[in-house]
Image 1 (tube, rainbow, N blue to C red):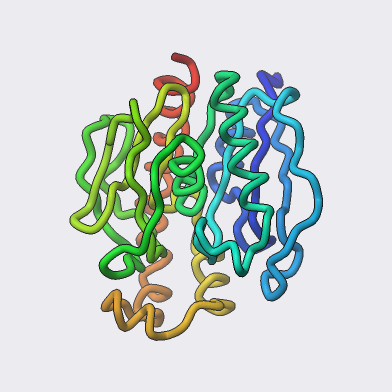
Image 2: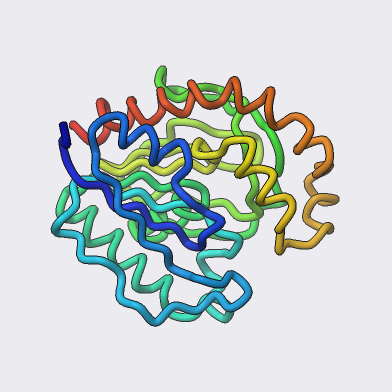
Length: 236
């Protein structure tokens, strides 16, 4: 039985909904994906973003760019921030993941800036919410956000806020959507420089080798996070 419609904003074909989309389908949502950029090597989009009105939930996923990197991604980030702001104002629940969490924070009045160093690989977080596992979670980011006014931090690491809630919106800095294939795809086709891995003290070969075991632990946690989002954020 379909309980509603979910819009998933995928910033490229490599940043899909993964386990998050699958869990939404298992919970009865019809999931529509909007792919912003067809070719990550040319990250421009002149297409209008979907209207908010038909959707009961919006999820916005990761990306290899920065929210403030308008010189590279052009004006589409402004259109996305407008969509997220509109959805939040209407009370449409939003789940932001990594870049999506940073975009959500920026749309609601927070800031996004470079972190002291990247977080890449499998990491644990400190969490205040019973439905947000401490990990391991896959991370791959060089930026961090400040909380919007009225938001509550739900999880953190020494480098960055890892989860926040603002009314019916939830942002998580880590990647609950990944499985082993997604991790390997990102590592094989990565556009970011090896300097980022050096700065993070991360070894892509080791990350890839650990993927299967780590995903086995993280997938149940991903389901619990989506369920918690639906029960404690979206339904509030």
